[in-house]
Length: 164
Image 1 (cartoon, rainbow, N blue to C red):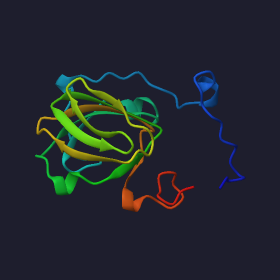
Image 2: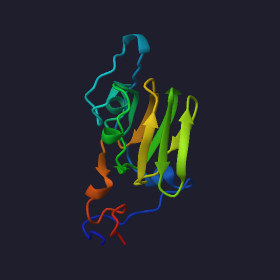
Image 3: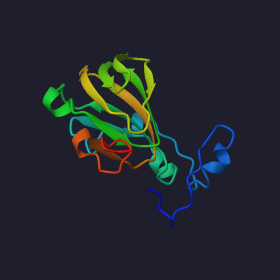
Image 4: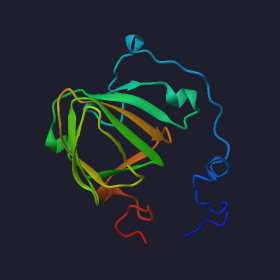
């Protein structure tokens, strides 16, 4: 259902992207050095530690970029939950270790150091296993987003089983 108080949605294409995406927040120059960085456990998942690369602050919250590593060994019960991320863009690049995941409509994939994938908005997926030394670089738009286990996807969300 369309909200009459909102302007109509416009399809973003390569040709109209700069105009269609509108004004972005003011961006700041930022540098992040590994030698000055530390991993912190205050992110989305309790078994993951995150090294913030400063993108949220530098882009006014538009983009999140971080390296995440596993803070504890793989625990299937805690990790292997089918879920989605409510994002516009998500790219993951494996820096170290490996991960095996299943993506709706695309099957299982083993990702190793050097593997990279784009995870479309709302794609249902499950992390099946990973190495204890796994480290990945993630770049996500927007910088703040929701993650839902499949059974908790809100009614009306495009990824909801009853969505039209």
